Image 1: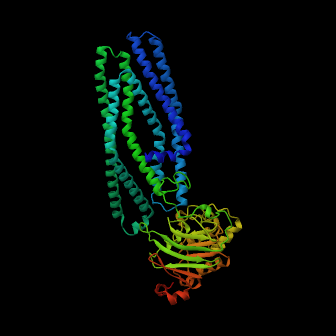
Image 2: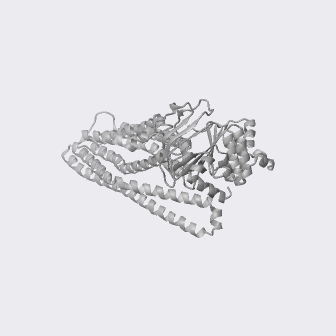
Length: 582
């Protein structure tokens, strides 16, 4: 029931189309019921057991008319228009929501492509398949009621068969879900390994590791094959069990019907009615196994979609599960006007904590305050939690404990984005296209604003060596640029958004000391507030505030002079930085 409730919430925006498709299939099943009743009357008229009403030819014509209307509705509207419409609308809607949710809350598992492919297709297929199945069971209920009115014993036999089959399916319910989950995980592992192999082809060739990688891919492929075979075998077992039980039950029911013919309690038309309805009931019974399989697949797909994008399935800020924790305790978007003035008066982090994740260090009770126009440097050893702290402050990781205040007001996750803050990660990402497209990336900036961002990012000299200037193609991932140029393009991308605070997570590490010093001097002269993760000595010397992290905890905060006097961790780091010439 939980899976169906989640699916219903998911389809809320398309409920009209879903009900329309369900109504279409139900109308087709009503036609089936009518045909059965007409067959009953036809055989009774032919056998002479009934003379009232229409003659046999009129009844046959009526059957033909109903069947023609059913076929016309089914093939010209239901399966040719309504079903494809709901499939593609559902896929488009889900992918839009998932992508939006992933971009707004990018802390999910790294299986987004699998989710947007396999899982979205599973949900959209169920959206088109379930109405037909609902109509089948509506038919089954009404058909059994009609058969009850003809002969209670035979109809009870049919009902008993249904109950027996339901019990059998319930016993088989749990195991298939595990097989399906294993198959999806194995497919994702193969896909991820192939992506890594293609992206790292040069590294693999340089290390002469082709055989090793090939063996690894083969091993993953074999694991996937075993998982898929197990899943399909068990699914076929469920469906075959039901499909074989139904004909056996039909034969037993027809055998019992011979009693009614012998004592005259049943007519030939009644037997025809039973035979016709039992054929349809057999389809309904056989569909029960497939329904269970579909529900299990749907549940797994919804679980994976929720894990990857907890806010992106049912729409922005609509929770999928009732027990989902809020992104930031005690904070709502009403606590701060996200469209108000962006001028920074103060940015304070109070007792910020984030639990460690898979391969990601946590941070514990970190507090500091950033003043307008200042340079704050976060430093520490490898694995100290510097990147985690920055991402937690910006709402890119969570949920977090503690408070983040902008100009005194508590801000929830996701609010510290342009035009408040702009972020340059450790490894900037460029996309296929030109320098102009990569810098703007959708920003509504003037040409003067673009030129100013290029100047502040120290890209002017590089552009003079490029014949196409800002129209220069950067290649896949910025392949045609140097590491320092990639970082400066990413910095220009941040600056063109005119943020109040520029956040760099070691985002200038590929620059030489002179270029980096010039860049920071220009940015600060322009009035920007800067928060930087760095180990560069000249940045530490010019920092207004240094935050020192050790194993996720803040071991000290202050100016360089203060920390070298009072903080042993800073003294050790300073000596290590000097030894590396940084």
